[in-house]
Image (cartoon, rainbow, N blue to C red; front, side):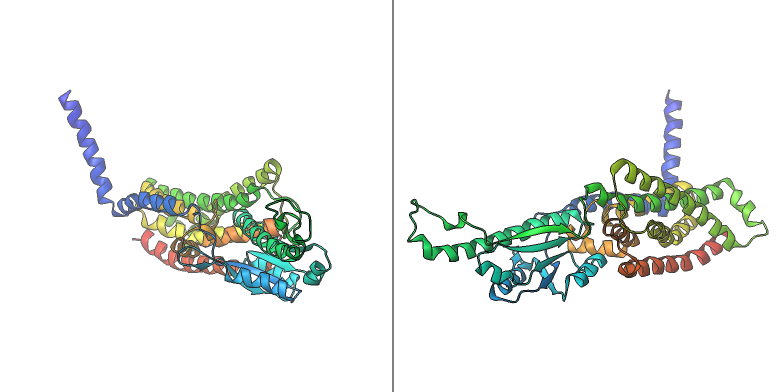
Length: 397
């Protein structure tokens, strides 16, 4: 029995010694729980998460009442730091504003129609139109509630002002409140694209991008490191083919697998959960490919540096898990603390997801995706230009 325990402890000590000697795996092992705790503590929306919301204003009426609404929105603040809730952007027309909304430069559009003030003076009910960004339902929902409350407050003030001269001559009960009689104007909400949007419409693009990227990253890590462990990589290296062909072949095989998985998610989203694609399906495929392209170099680099398959997988998990939470797959980036938003803007997955949402939910075209396309292509070129020479040097040692 004593001998059995002794042998068991020796094996345990040997494995732990190997683990602590592998510095890359040890670093990833320590960083992983730190990332998870920091993310789960900060990514969830707080009660005062809405601030500096980009609100487009299409003001076709310039009378005192309309200008008063704009002034109130412009000066609204929140919290102890008195951060502005809205950053207003005056737009010339609704079409221009909608293009900015598709690009992601605006969070919503408020339209003040022509003859808004004069219509109220004539006894007509004025209607303000709020056009929301359906690709971000959480932010749009909160924003709609805030705008409706602001408009209700302003409308009640106008109603009191109009009714007070008559309240003294009307037979009214004790404690009469003129606010209950009329709402001179209201806000009507509509989406950028027609139809009702469910929450999975928001989730589907993020899940697609996440599945494809994780499939490629994990696939590369497993493929290259397993070949090194089994010794079959040496056989491939002595074959009469260039090192670049080996790298590209590995990357292309994992890309194909990742796109196949992404296609499965897309089909399930459409036929099982009723997701509608308002943009081009070919643009969706292109964005998935560019999302993979932006990460292939990073996957090759890590797989080359890791000496064992377990180490490569640990490092990949350490990198991919934070990206899932920080790139806006499940929660809007705008509701995270400022420093978390900065981190999310460094991740190419964030831009792949944003672009997919614009195409699938808003029907955006290439002109509205210029920023995302440039970032994905640039990140892919930079990482590949670093990964390929490093991979060549390491595998020929």
